[in-house]
Image (cartoon, rainbow over all chains, first blue to last red; front, side, top):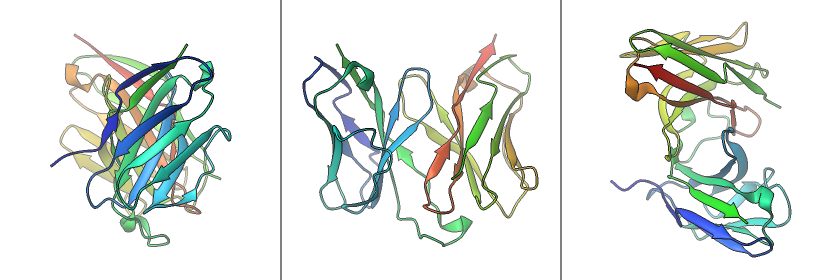
Length: 121
Length: 112
């Protein structure tokens, strides 16, 4: 079946412009995650959705970053007034719902999309 | 909160030899530890995971060991092949909010 898809695959923008990144999760996956990966670095958690609510926004680096999700499907990550330090690959992942406090057997695998490479000039 | 450290940052091994990547974590309540492989230009993909109720798990050429007392876990790849070249990430599931805390990654290079 279809995996997680992200668009665009590449985005080049000028400093100060707004950008919108899109993620289409696997059908039936109610959990959705956004990560940022700078060149040669690890994964930096940005935000987590369960359905269309975001119980954890703790990773958003500034108020220029926001995300929303329509129902249990598409999510968009918006970066306003982009800065050069926003240049990175933005990864989206989805998973089946996790049962909090359900013990180690209740956590489900995250499936990642190919990412959007954002370059801010 | 949970903190995960991963070593080494780069590992170069001869094809056919074994590779070992190690991670340590800080929160003794963590109980799920996955390993992801990221090939160039792609998103990470789960290759193996271990839960706190076992000490070792194997899947063909890859294995993961967990030492809960010492709070470390390791990825072992035997008989390495060129297609094993990638960046490998370890992670630990934070018990308080059910979020994965990721290691910084290890770039594995397989020399022909």
